[in-house]
Length: 598
Ligand code: GDP
Ligand code: MG
Image 1: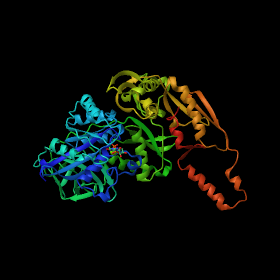
Image 2: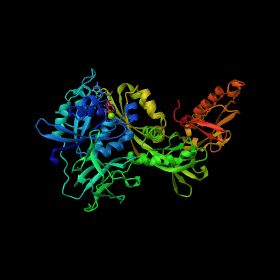
Image 3: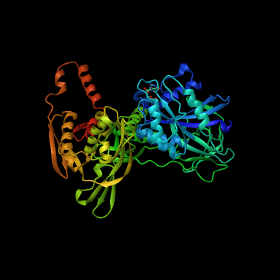
Image 4: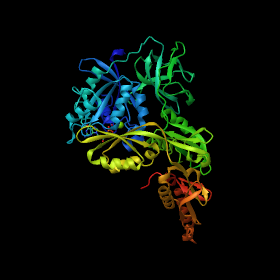
């Protein structure tokens, strides 16, 4: 393949502005996918993506485009997620490309992740092609949005295609723009192999499938290759591209985005960001790789069935191949037994990981409430980083606690500025500045403790703005706060997995709310169970779960045995997601009770 005819690009945008739909049209227009095989958002291949209507994973496909100049071009298109939690997927995609198609909704204009993704593309020195989408909507105002892109981002929109990804209108202009503006890959095909790993997945028959962008040299079946950071060596057994079905090829030439398999069973050998080189002509230096992502929130994941602990470890190991930002280490809880402390980039990420573990690896899990990382300075001058409230040292040893703060950028129409400010203030946010995007909308900047964002900020923001606000944040550092550990006691016993860290001013209210909520969530037992919230050993709130009056089986006294069995069966069903702690059964919802409170 003539390298000058290759174009590698990502599609980036705020969530729901139409990235995946544009990818659909491009696949159709280039006849990569036959119409009868076409489904909406075809690149969202995970069940979870289709159900939720969001893209979680990047997805790379190869397609051929016959341009108006009569030449045939080879495109590698990478569809990316828009949600802030999956930025890592976007940044890895961008490192495999020379250009980015920036999709902006003609009715909504620039939103928080539009900007965030543009900055990522600029960091990677990509050519950005602005595209105004959804011009078929009655509320579309493409001229206003073009102005916005020019004024706020500083991209020239004179030639920006005005499209409808839904109907396909003007999508051909996007393809022509890509040919014209995205540079061809510059790597030297004669140089030693350097291929950047941007993703991977575990296949039970073929081992790890590695997704790479060939930056220098080439790679072919039979080659002996080395992972430069891991040091491991393998022989390439298969390689190819996707369209989006798997296509096998004999080689991946310079500039191509594709995959290879080498019967890799040891998942530790493959790291996203590592460079693949050849054993016979190794490159001297690896490619720059990626900035490591540090998790923002942590939670404990425990199998409901203790016997599944090893399965969970195995599943985490394999899922990490496909989700490079996931981190985990073993932990034990008095209440929940053996499990893992896992780090995530945000709450949606946490949710998605839990669901993927359950669906793709057939596990049933209990997740504890998410926590951020606290810096705990001790009186002896040392500092502990605490990601699990249960590990907080005794209060006598603590000199001060610092918590992470984020800079939050919120885009919001005029009418909702008041409610958003009120929300941020209630979340201990510090107002920084506000500026106008245009006559109808504003960009608000606040500094807010991450711990408060984790604590039901998204849902509240959505409800006070009727969904009209968009939100992006980044970590800015640590600041001291009046923070305390709050323990929850059931039947007089501290349940370590229920401990949380709260601000002093909120402790009383949250203690009350949690105990009341737990009372509703924990099923009644044969005896009365007191629920208490305590700070530094002092009880600040309490309720009781009344005892069960009737035995369920009493109803079937003398009745037929199958009915009795069915009842017991049913009870067992209901217990699936429960964990017996001492003599009390705690359901999954109880661990999340601390998160959703009014
Ligand atoms: P993504 O999150 O950026 O990948 O967005 P999707 O491609 O999943 O699209 C989000 C929603 O917008 C879907 O319901 C699409 O059908 C819809 N959509 C996408 N493009 C258009 C368009 O050009 N016009 C209209 N009316 N709707 C569109
Ligand atoms: Mg999408």
